Length: 179
Image (cartoon, rainbow, N blue to C red; front, side, top):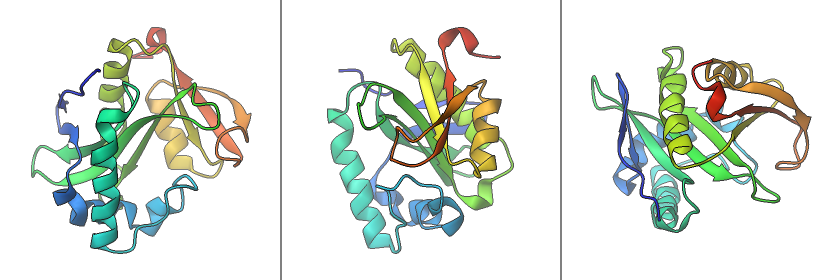
């Protein structure tokens, strides 16, 4: 089993979640600006105890996920603030394709954190032998689409295959890193 190291970038630390992160995580997953774009199975979280329960489930599931799948917290180094979450997961319905996704606290938008954290996780995933990663976004989610492009992902089309929702699909392979 591959364990996830703590990943560090110039400004960020990417680490495992803890139930102690519930209050800060609620600022992300409870924010309407974030929740409107989440996958159908991830509902808006409305209070700290509900967030703590979600985090407890993520922490418990983490060791049982097919590597390099997982969910991680994104912490800003300058002040130690938890500002986002990242995940690598197998996309439904066939669980063949790894999806990279990210969510940031709206107060942290516009600083390049999603791209910076995403690049670190993409690099780590490729070191684990993943041959390609996908990102999916609703057609009107301009922020997610722009981040996928900044990560060097190429647009490969539109589909309803994942989540039974019309989505834009982006892909990156090891040869495209740094593009």
